[in-house]
Length: 182
Image: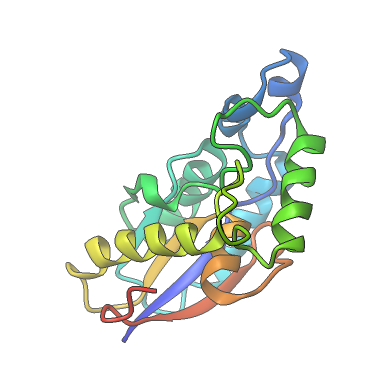
């Protein structure tokens, strides 16, 4: 078993993205808000005693910025893995804003996180999120024997731990078993 601390990025500031009218995946370029920076600093201080030897992050700006802050404070380099990216509320990447994401999330919740039998939906099922996160962990835990910090997103943490409402800058302890592929 490998100890992994799943850390949700700090609170983002979507004003620059929304002000430009950028839809869908362009929101992934939003930086942290002032509060988000403080949250990343606080979680770095909180996790300073766990002895982490490795830090891996989602490639999205809010996670990378959080990882840079945490890595700097803990003297850890930041590795990036695309598979720790946020959940896709629509596989076409064309959602227009928060209302579209919330609608997809409501449907995901209605179906327990998985597509109904034989009816593919445009949103990514939690099993797919879990599978890609486990693939990332398999790559990154192979080169370390100490605890790992994974800076990621609420839906990734939900898919792995079952926690539905994790706050920005919060973390969950997760024991990763490399033999578990589900």
